[in-house]
Length: 180
Image (tube, rainbow, N blue to C red; front, side, top):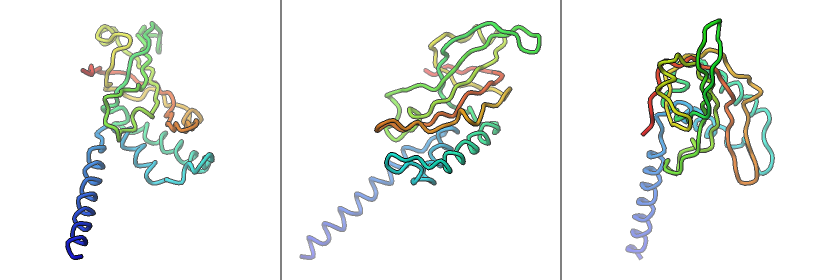
């Protein structure tokens, strides 16, 4: 009887150790992913069944807007260039690249990046615009030019899918880093 008890205690200890390892592997250095994960963990009641708690959604909108003011908002965020066009900003001709988050099946299973949507219009000088290609994947070093609208930040809850739309922002791009 003692052996059976010790076997169950050992099995429980091993299973607890495995859970800790799984959680550790989902830790992210990507600012947006960290913040959204923390918010979701702090508000498990946000979506219960088919209902969405509007009060928590409102809080999420305010938090995302606050995060977007932080210097690290786009830090290490993988984005894909969807289009690039000529435009004029403050009387100066520039290129405007439209970047967005994208789905990548090679990300760790615990990553919520595939469920986060953010759109960035990146104002780029000609030399940076020459370094990028449509459909290319990049991280950006950029400064906020115009903040997005709080009403564009929302929870997407369709059937079994739950995603997070963080809205659209305009940034002045200082550097693009290709993702390999």
